[in-house]
Image (tube, rainbow over all chains, first blue to last red; front, side, top):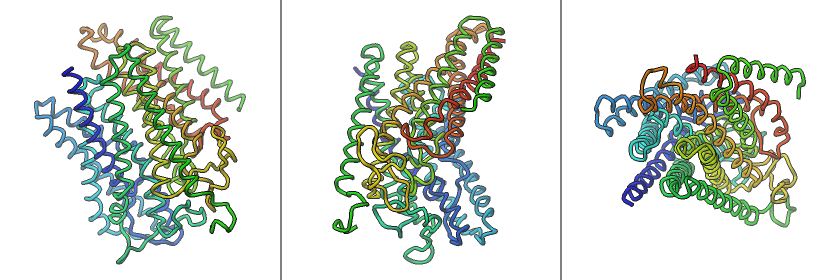
Length: 299
Length: 265
């Protein structure tokens, strides 16, 4: 009984950490403009729209986070093997991994923007100075929390994978969940804020991203502020639920029916999410209505 | 399908399988190779189900999840592998199904949040650009597409496709892991002259890293077959899967042979 209570506690802590990780990951990738919406940041100067948005999309979020979290986990594992306290080891490992992220962000920005020089896009050194450190700070939060989850799963819950491999697996899953959930909000709602709400961006508008803010030119810190309002928390909830439910079903139900208990509970959870998804889809169809209706709808 | 390439692929597959048979005999290692190939096929087939919209989906210009094919499939499959590896002691069938459910669970949650963001964050209903009616629910799609786009969000059939893709990917990744784990647990103690308990961490790490690697090989291979974006099982591009299966069988056989021969020779 005690071990189950301990397992539930660890599961809850891991779920909470994953929520923070997901939110930080999405905000970091939006400030650095690393997700798929970056196609527009790259396209804008080619269409004549010069901007001051950061641009570091030389790898997708999942492999990039796979690298950084595996690096943080591997270094933490090495420090722990040197008899350093786990918390300090995780902090040190994550901090060193963040330096790699900083080098990545700097070289990616310079390379990406320099490739646009023939379209008149300048490299803004002040953008590099002010944004890189902010993405590094968010990346530290995401990497530290994810490495801590991996350590809890390995040391407290007894998963057979070593810490660096767990870091790779959960780093890729973190990037996948964060980019899937947060990208549309950053891409559609922020980059194309001038387009109509409640409709997709017409393909003809591609590249015409919003480049001016309330005062002066918009920069990526403004984008981080915006996406932290919904895209970040939603990504956090998404990754938090993935980690929490995956651990919860295993910790509590694995012993029932020689492993079949966890399988049945997993299938039930999938069905519950399917019902929720269908409910949201139908709700949107009823409340928003079709675009193609004639004028009496006022559309 | 391109018949000459298919035949060449099948011949290559038979050569690799034959060479492994010649080198290791008809024992457990040979069956592990077959298991690895089946796992690779499950992954390659599963990736075709995952609705991936890439960059256009991030602007609500095309349906699907706004990320890359290989990225998302790897995220789901590895989450499944995590669960499957945990259940490895419960036997092959339970572990593979646990891995499958882990992958499906990751996709179910992610797809639900994609719909959530589209509907409540962006005020956009789901609409497919490839079919007039959702094959599962029968909902009409065309009038819910906003002007100048190919559709947006995840219609229900795409959601179901995502979950099936996660199930197949998670199961396939776990199958590869368990097959290789058995090989390493058997071969490493003799090779390193150590007790089975001492080599277990090395066996787990080696099998885990090979499973992750083979997952990425199959996911990336399939991403090339899909070329960019796919809406799910109702997308015309889905019909391209047979050629990905041939390519995946060859790639998995080659990777599997290398993974087995490092301890067999």
